[in-house]
Length: 83
Image 1 (tube, one colour):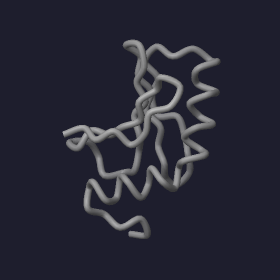
Image 2: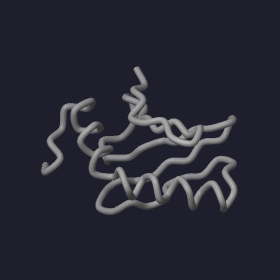
Image 3: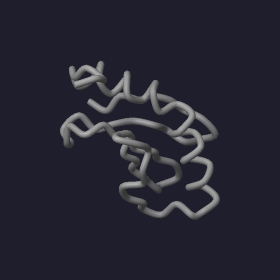
Image 4: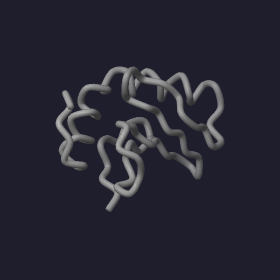
């Protein structure tokens, strides 16, 4: 199961349930994908095809909704945010 956390400007923000426990979010659009760590702070983990302009937009969105993404991640995985 891959829950969608948010959709904005054509980007889909989601996680993959079978990955590591460290909080993160994947962003996909047009065959490209990027992964951001959410803890201990927002940080680019991997980029598969997005250019600099897209990365800047995505980073702003992830930073803006980071706490929401953490709560959604925790709810989906079953981990408290303050663990």
